[in-house]
Length: 98
Image (tube, rainbow, N blue to C red; front, side):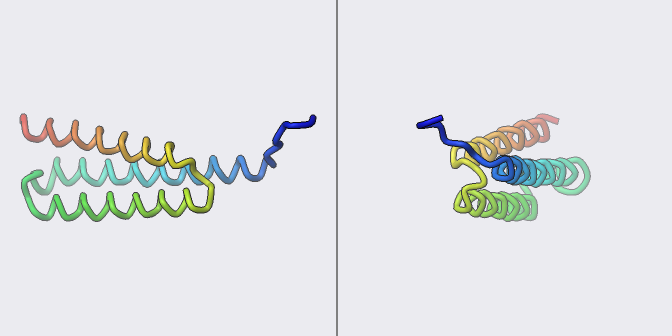
């Protein structure tokens, strides 16, 4: 067993839980923006931009915190944000084309 790093199961489940919570928050942002686009305001509205910026900033701070605690890999956090941004761009483009 020399040279093999064993990670306690608790650490793995904490890492999985942290990522799952961040993913859930990303999904909430996506749903919030979708509802806002569908029912409230258009993407050109300052309120839309303010909500989007605030939510994305909050999620990025959550990810930074999880990375600093070594609960989430920095690359995983970046990918999560990039994926959310791509999904939000799809919603934005669909709203612009309708």
